[in-house]
Image (cartoon, rainbow over all chains, first blue to last red; front, top):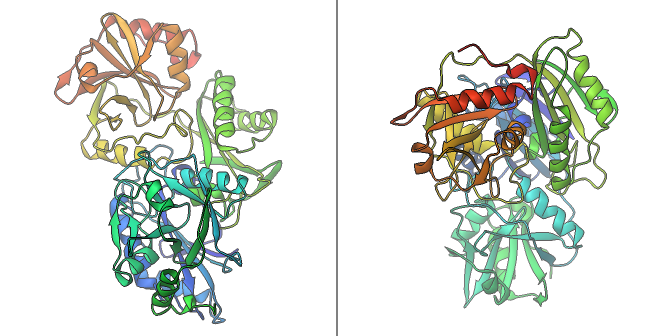
Length: 271
Length: 271
C-alpha cells in the first residue's frame, strides 16, 4: 500500500497507537476511482465526507491540501483507487472525544479491483443491518456488520453478499448499492435507518430517474433485472441470487451507457 | 501512553496503516484494573475476549505471551489501568477478512481515572443503541454510538450518559453497566440485542443474586437506588438522573462491601 499519513497539516511516519479510529472506529472514509491521475467525482466524495464529519462532529482537514496529497500519489497519470480515511485523531482512553481534536488522515493508492468476467452471484447474508438512523447514510468506520456479512459471502462462494435490514428489506450489498428494475422503473432501497448512501448510487438515482423506497427481498427476486454499483467499479450486473437467475437485460446496458457519460472510467465494454 | 505493539509474536514500532481495526473497527478490547502490578480479573477479561474473538472469527495471540507483556508494563508494582486491543491485523482494502489473519495487539498502561468526589449525575442520551444480536455483549471496536452518547453527556455537564435501546429500555451507561434496586432486589438490564456484558457486571450478578431483565427507563427512575459499575472503577453510586435524585442507600454500601471481597482495588472507602 502506497500511503501517506497526516495529523492536521503535519506529515507523520505512522499512525499513533492512541488514534481513536483504531480504538473505536471513530472516523470516516471515502474510496474513489482515479482516472488518468484525476478523481472525476472528488466533489461528490468530499461532500459526503463533510456530511459524515458534521454528523460525528469530526473536524475535516483542509480540502485543497488533502486533494493535493491524494493526487500526488497518482502523478504518473495512472488509473486506480484512492482511499481517504479521516479519523478524530489521537485521544486519551475513554469514549469522550477530545475537546479540540486534530484529525488524522491517510491517503492511499490501490489498484483497480479485478472484476469477474461474468455477472455476479449474490449470497443473502444472515448478518443483518441494525437500525441506527444517527449513523445511516454516512461512510463511517464502524463496519463489523459488513465484515461479517462479507465473510459469509466468501464462505458461500459468492461474489458479494446481499444485506437486509431487521425487517427483511434489502438495503444493498456489503460494498455496493443495489438497483432493481420493477415494472419498467429502476428502484433502489431508501437509505434511512441503515446502509450507506453511495456516490455512484446518487449519480444513478438522478440519471435513471430511479425511485427510492423500501424494497423487500421478494421484490428483488421477482425484478426483471438487478445490478450493484459503487464508485470504484461502476455498474455490476447480477446473474444469480440464491435460486433466482437473470440473463443480461437491455435496461442494464442502457444504465451503463448513462453511467459512462458521468465517469470516464466506466466506459461501456463491448458486448 | 505507555504502549507496546505486536503482530503475532513480533514486536512492532507502530501500527501498520492498513490495520483493519483502523479501517473498520475490526477488533476487540479489554480494559482491566491493575492492583500492585497484578490483574486480579485477568481470567474473566480473557474469557470475554475469547468469546468476542470466536464471534468475529479473529484469532487470538498466545495468552501467556500477552499476559507477560502486559504485566511487564507494571513491573514497578504500581496500580493503574491496562488496556488490551486485539485487531484482525493488516489487510488489503475491502471488507473481506484476509484468509489467514495475523492479529495485531497492543498493551498499554494508563492511570486510574479520577472519580468525582460525589455520586454521579447521569444524562439520558438521545443516541440510542441499535439492536444487533450478533454484536451484543462482546467488547468490539465499533463504538460510535458510545462516542456520540458520551459527547451528549459532556455537553449536558453530566458525569455519564445513560443509553436506551430503540424500545426505550435502559441498557447501561456509555462505559458502565447499571444496577437498580427495585422491591428489595437488584436488577440489571439483560444484554441480548445490544450493550456490553461487563466483567464487573458478571461478578455482581452473582454476588448480589441480581436479576437480568428488560428495564424500562421509568423503572430505573422509580428505583430505590441505582449504581453504575465497570472493571476499572468498581461501583459508582448515582445521585441524579434528570429530575430524579437519590441520596445514599445502604444497599449500595452493602454491594460495595461485596465487590471489595472480589477485587482488592475496590476496597470500601470510609463513609
